[in-house]
Length: 318
Ligand SMILES: [Zn+2]
Ligand SMILES: [Zn+2]
Ligand SMILES: [Zn+2]
Image (tube, rainbow, N blue to C red; front, side, top):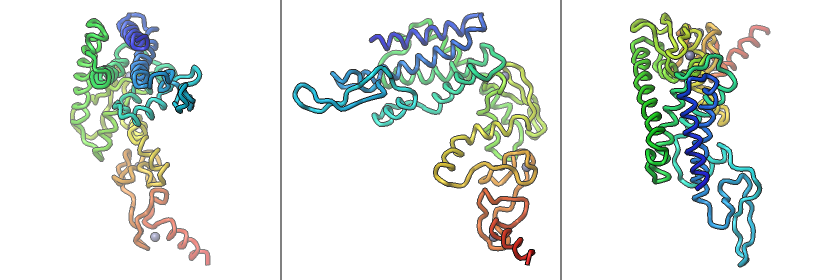
């Protein structure tokens, strides 16, 4: 029971930090709420651990041991408890469902707020609290079979619900302002909608224009009022948006989804969408000499593949 109580206390303290007028408590707000969520997860792992296994599922180290009757059991050893990666693996293998993408976003924000963001304000933590609200509510209801309002207490539950509501509404307004603009490709819109302000971490990025082309628009962070030009944010937004795909393509040896633009060298070039997010140019994807599909690492401002270009150079030298 004590892990569950610690989890609830940590979330409650995090919410008190958030409500406080003292700006120094913003970082601890993010830290406490995230810690509280991990404790909820650990509580579930304790509940699922076999009796007499010394809470094996929350220990990083689990070793086989004979019990009194000579049967082999898996028993937790040492004091080190599971980290986020361990929890992910164990939950996946046990069929416990968590929206990991959302949790990773909370974790990234918590990490960034401690190390990178120069401007801290209560508004920029709203996204973390809104994400946390969804994770906490779903986990308590679906995995712990409890009533979140009762477990967290009405006062804290209300803060979560209210912040989520405000954030969702503002996020929707931002999204529809972005939706009013034209883009070279729809993926760019999606990337900008998912983008977080580099100064304060807020996800509330809106366009200051309601119509026209995105490359001519000025964007603004609602939370710290930082104003941003398209060229200043689009590459970062694309990198964040495609980070998982890039990682996977690298791991599996597939075509990289994003490369450097061979035409302007300034923008990211979306390989599958066949365009640069800054200059809007399209490179040649089919070799005009041999007809193969040119792979991302050979895309250039010419119209032949790497092999043909090599053969051409050789011919010219002879
Ligand atoms: Zn900002
Ligand atoms: Zn370009
Ligand atoms: Zn070729």
